[in-house]
Image 1 (cartoon, rainbow, N blue to C red):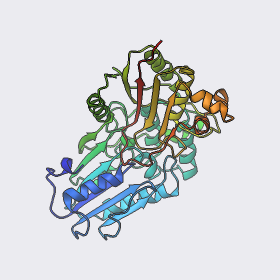
Image 2 (image 1 turned 90 degrees about the horizontal axis):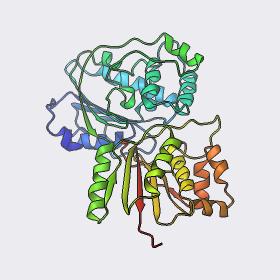
Image 3 (image 1 turned 180 degrees about the horizontal axis):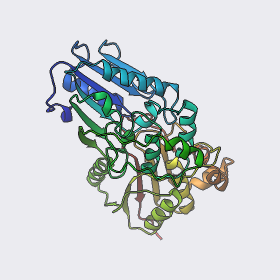
Image 4 (image 1 turned 120 degrees about the vertical axis):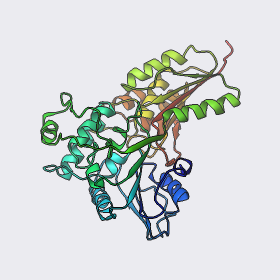
Length: 386
């Protein structure tokens, strides 16, 4: 992080840094290493993150840390939005800004559009997260409900110098999709509402204005970087590594079938996918997230098979409505879960993959990682004697 900032042409004083997202804490620490913000009267930092944020900078008057809500926004998200706008508005005309943005910002900070209230926002996000729609469509709708998303925060900069550094958690690394594009107007402002219910269409109808403006934007980390790091490490360990030619995406059940088709009869080695699947959730899903669900679906495909071990994880350290990172499964996962009273078919139908994987002993829990570059699927295929 600091290496990306050390060469940045910024003012010695009147530097205002904003860090928002799942990686806000680690990015803010990097900014402090580069700029020496903490304790400097001419510099200020606003950090908006989750409740896992460490507090090494909180004792300094120049640093303001706000703990907000994720994955569903709440009153803290609105308070963070108010604080963000105030931070920009009270900065002097000579201020220069550096924004450090990562995935999760969509829920962590919000200023509601006229006519939208918090319960509307929460209902919309609850529906969107379980809709199975791609993140591009989800963020299109989120922009309609907001006074700051989709580049609308540009108005609060009032033409002052700004640089944006982003950690990408979206396929294609579109800055307008990361955190719903606080400072990046969408390339296409049209919003396709055909897949959303009428009540959500009506909320969006009056809030489709596109802002104008442009700031310097750089992607400093992406899913491909994580994949490359795994390839380098695994190769040193003697693995033959195969990286999927296309990123993992689309419906989770379709993705599971594709991965199973590749690895069930594959040669020994490490097989690697990066990306993010989508899920369509029932009204009251059980425990888990898309990685645990993908892992359990694949455990069914691998049932009774020796020599295949598979890991599905979120790089941010969390998955769905659970605190778990994901799962490591093998050909014995289903049998272990059943032996402890689970039913794999019921778990899949109820989207209670985490509940079943807890019984089988196959959950992974790393805690927050300080970054967020989507998901990873790693499959080790070993030679098994006939």
